[in-house]
Length: 303
Ligand code: NAD
Image (tube, rainbow, N blue to C red; front, side):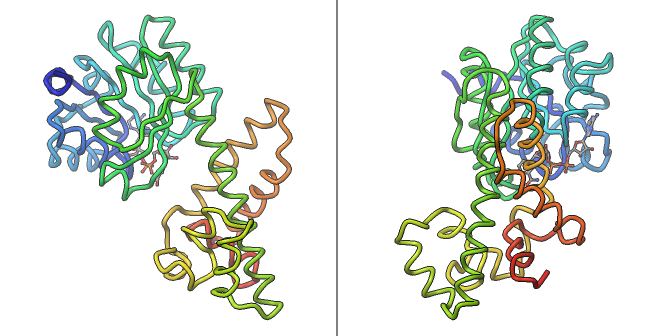
């Protein structure tokens, strides 16, 4: 029943970059009728090769769509693509549902969802966790904010692109979940890096410290799944000279979004602020193309 309804669903997809390209391809692979557009003609060509239809403009891509999905760089792009005359709200058909999967600031997410609601459109923010590999494999995690009814409508579309689909509550809460999780991840990665570096300087090798701490109270994901010291976790980027993975540049983007939100909410995040500053040092050293666990190199002086 659901599959039958889904196959008749028309999707307008805007933003066919590293993430959006494979996400649109997975929607087409699931049998949906996807019209895709991007500022880059090459990106649209690739989407057409992957089974999407060519959308010459944003207006053309959304005109006939039941569901619009956007995957854009930042809040300014999302505000523009939704609210300007050429954009989604002005050109979508009555009753269409909007899903923005970009990682953006909470205020922009809430403002755009409110602008859509004002014109009678349901919309959710649904940022993702998992990088290009998960986008390609269709195993992304979606953290979704918005009305329960809009979430239920969005879910089958999100399921064609991801594995874990969460409803985080009201509009903007998907972005809140994403930046709070990534702030914690950035902080914990720095903490693990400091501990492994200190252990080594004091004569305790990485594997022995890992064996002890990973079964003791210092245990966390940054250690057991993504250890920044080479050796103990063979699949971790630390064993391939910190090739990403999840780049320090992307971690810094999320850290900055978290700090911006924290200032506005008057929430104390002293460790988040420190973590942002350390990832900014990777940026100024020109090393933010490394995986974020490459912050170990900053800590041990080998950057
Ligand atoms: P990207 O820069 O590769 O892609 C963005 C695309 O949007 C580009 O192709 C660009 O041409 C297009 N675009 C910009 N303005 C447009 C407009 N007005 N009309 C049409 N197209 C427009 O970025 P990405 O890596 O795909 O990331 C997209 C979002 O997902 C970002 O918010 C990012 O933070 C988030 N994200 C990325 C990753 C990752 O690993 N790359 C992981 C999780 C979340």
